[in-house]
Length: 510
Ligand code: HXC
Image 1 (tube, rainbow, N blue to C red):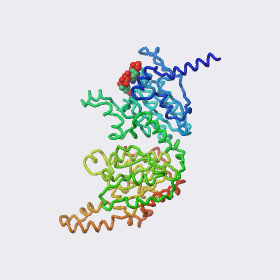
Image 2: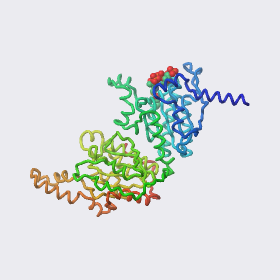
Image 3: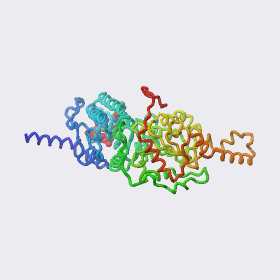
Image 4: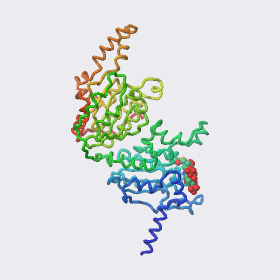
């Protein structure tokens, strides 16, 4: 018996070595950790239960029958993060470049299926040369099986992708269908076709980093939610980020007690809004000042900066924050910001996370670039997402809420549960100057008259009281009392129940 136990230990040791020490050294030399080291850092110490350590590929072409590595290039299993169950797969670049074979895909699908059964998040660590070339269509089938599992798990358990190496071709589509993507600068990239193909087809010359590196995807494309400096930072981030999320769509996010009292007044907010309505201020200041312990976990901080999204806690409970940012493009809604916020609102709604919306929006961005790009359809995504959301929705208008953007930003009309306005709020079809230039077109050229009409309009509409007189605003609140009023509203809404009519699924404008 002892011999057999020893043999088992030897087999495990062989599996742990993946593609061998040389390739491990190469991985380290690039500043990358191995698949197992990553799991060790991500999970609570000693909590990892590995499955399918002894799986081998079934390929007999191109001499592969003599080239088998236990585990077949992906380490899978489950463990805990801060005591909470998660399922994980981690691709091993030292084994056939982490490429995905039929059996490699089966291992991933197995843990995804189990995660959905027990209601625990799935974390995928991607570091792979894509489809296992020697396996041809079997490998493509494997990818499709993973995609199918991604889709069935979407909205049921949170799915988080760490991209920590190459991720090309079809391989980008599994991460793309997960809820959040974390990338590592300089060592990871994602693209549908690599620089060589780009050069052949479009004659563009571009490096892998420029085409699909972490900086590109966290600034220009918005594919990635966080660009991290290295593997260790990325894994630590995911460990902390997951604390904000529920384990599945039937649970609420974990409660984290805080010494920060719910009725804390923040007097500095009373002087935040500048006297000049065209002067910007930083909306993030409001977020940090009203959140528990002044903590805010921003997502996509460098993409579509005219809208701010992320997680915070209010009185110990996770909330999703969506906020216009007057510092960037005056906080206008455009294509990118609508897509960014729309997807986030849907994530929160799918996972029982209340949404707190801070509004200072002068409208949708005008111009041919936006119209030709389809702002009508993309802006409608955010509108649609807010309108269908049934989670608690608390909205605070700090300054401008003009036009369609007023409606879109979780207004009362879209089933906003509690809608507050600061006394500085201006709720109207458009800003005073634009409005006067349209309704008093005949006076154009008479500066004095236009000035007088603008002042008249400003007095009449640039305030929250007309909306409040109709009940569209539940109360006009002092800025310093925002935290207290929001926390109370969320407490009142804790057991909110609202369902949309039955249907197969809605038809959000994609
Ligand atoms: C089998 C692969 C592989 C693959 C890499 N390897 N990619 N083996 N299938 N797809 C192996 C290499 O042979 C090598 O083996 C080891 O992994 C490391 O690769 P290197 O090339 O030495 O590493 P590096 O220089 O870092 O380059 C990494 C790479 C490159 C950029 C990923 O290997 C590469 O371009 N691979 C091919 C990528 C690709 O075209 N994949 C198919 C995409 S299409 P040894 O034994 O030397 O260590 C696709 C379709 C999916 O994925 C569609 C789904 C719908």
